[in-house]
Image 1: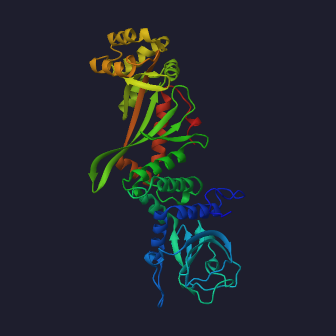
Image 2 (image 1 turned 90 degrees about the vertical axis):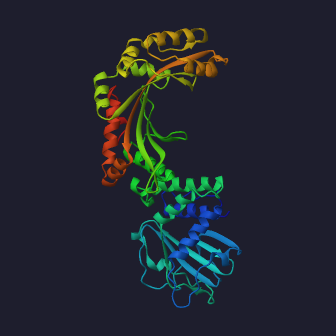
Image 3 (image 1 turned 180 degrees about the horizontal axis):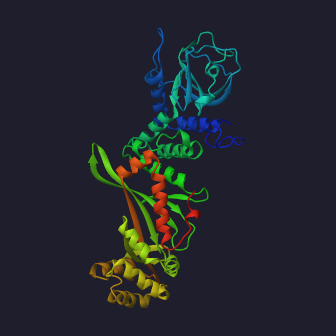
Length: 433
């Protein structure tokens, strides 16, 4: 079966093997015309012509039969021209001319445009492993009529990845192509992370997809390997944590329409939500959150909020403001843990009125309308009570960029995660490296 058939991967090679990277990229070129065109244009741009060599022209080859293959040993090459392509991590220079060699060649990749052009591709993710003789085609099965371009085209993985990231915002790309491009980029992130050029917020230029990718990679750099990182499509990336009072910590990208020098304003929010479910809330208040620590955090840049809401099973329905300050809210629930329980339908309205009478929640006309629409007009038999506590630490764009550039952002966010977990003495060592 064709090795570049999407469903026919290498089974004997680990994902980190460079052949897997080659195969993955060639599969992408096979199935994504936009990725293929970007690759061709990159080759054309980097080719330094000598003498009377013919320039590359995509329009000249567009109606030819394209074939893409991998790991071919001395295939028949009878096209008019042959181009040697190296893909690696740096723009290295091959001072010797490309010429047919007596070597036995196994090409990492080979792309043929009808009878016009053959590209032989050598992939070396680490430039230190490049052996320049590998860039020469084998004489065996090479037609004497084939003209070999004298210069190797050297492509950098970081530029290829930049091209692919920019394609994700092109309106003419189908959903399936975007999925394939994103899957390839995720594959690189996981198994070849050093090839990703977006290792600093300053390089992302305010592009949402690149900022998201940097957030994901950043979180992977600070949490233990056993900790899972997920993305909620509505609000962004979060870390799943192994505690009862809180199950996830978000590092959330926020953007507005304000632009500075053509770049949208953005910032990061480190987001803690304790007691998000009824069971989490009971565990949180049994842990007796430290009011003095909360006051200290509030004085040092953290924003605290009462996030009381009601839920049916796993679906949150309505949120309520509180009529008391955050500390009285916490003290009330510490004293009344037993009231954090499921309420029968007949009991819900009376209980909400009771909380409103004690200023724990604001049960005004607007909230009553939401309750009518979300609960009372339905047949839901009961409700869960979720007196959550929210904590947010905001990191402005300028701070994120500068501290990421100097390597201090890891220390800052790790410190803030420790602060957040400390209010109920949770062990940050279970989360952070």
